Length: 291
Image (cartoon, rainbow, N blue to C red; front, side):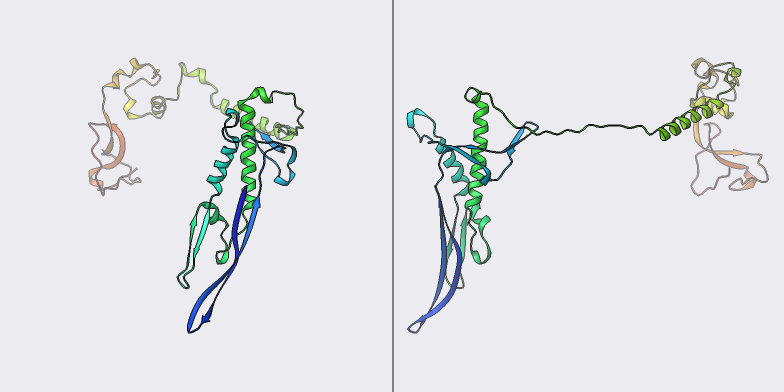
């Protein structure tokens, strides 16, 4: 049984009794009592990805059969009613106590339900529908769990209406775009292949390593090496393997008159390069270097 008594209105005032003014308050209360009994009910449910949930309102449930639930200690059974009573007490036990002392009046709340239902002027809404919906959800979850844990009880052939849906990706080829993309791909391959025409005339395998690229641009550090050596072989690098290189300032005595030499022309042309450590100095702050 759910028994809810709540205030739906109140009005304060005062009246005189002799020479004394007495503060008064008029409160309108409403009581809502609902008897809850056991039974077998048919629910509309939704099953998705191994998750089941209710798919209808309480008014759409179909009552099939009245069911008397055993109380605590009857025939040695555990108390089903006790479990529901505990859940209902935990969720719904609540109170709002109003202490009237004129201008210094207050209300003391206990439990979450009173806080959820409080409205203007400390009146309250009827919580019964919400309480029944929550107990309906608990009863449904309990039935699902009982059916899972006691398969021998519910192991029976059942006919269930099922409505399912799925999605499939369907790809359609647009001939015009496909031909254009293929033509561009082939043109790119041809354009790159043209750059490799005549590779057999080099006389050796060619790689795009930093050393090969530096040698192709006639880097001074690699000048002692033959112009057509295979630099992928470490043995061919022995003439320069012991050299130490660093990045810094290099002074060149002879510079073109049309080039900006940086710094003072009398001291030659100054550049920032990667070169032999014996020929390179540390860059100086504030110094402007040429090209």
